[in-house]
Image 1 (spheres, rainbow, N blue to C red):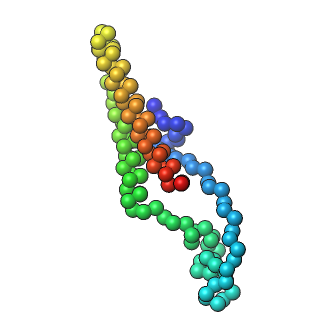
Image 2: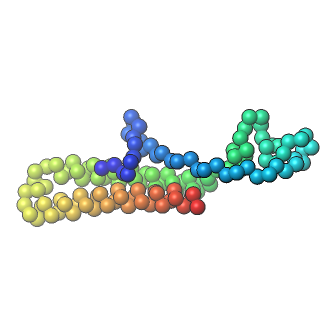
Length: 130
């Protein structure tokens, strides 16, 4: 019932693991306009801060909102699948060929909804890496 290699925290929330991006080689140092002997991006950083922190761009509010919507869609699809599976646990859901076919179709639709929600979220996250 869970997505590809998904882990869960004790409170039930999904945990996503991402591989760190390979580190880019440091560009050649450029003299700082501050005139204090510091170079490039590190001139404006606090002592001990990494140069990557200054050049890394944070996601926009719209991107964060869309990601939250997609994550919520995944959670809702998973919850709907659990409800369908609970419904299908009743013997009357499988009492006749007709009921069995309806039950199987209902379960397949709920499962595909979960898969589609994960696919949309994964495509969105892959888009950020491009």
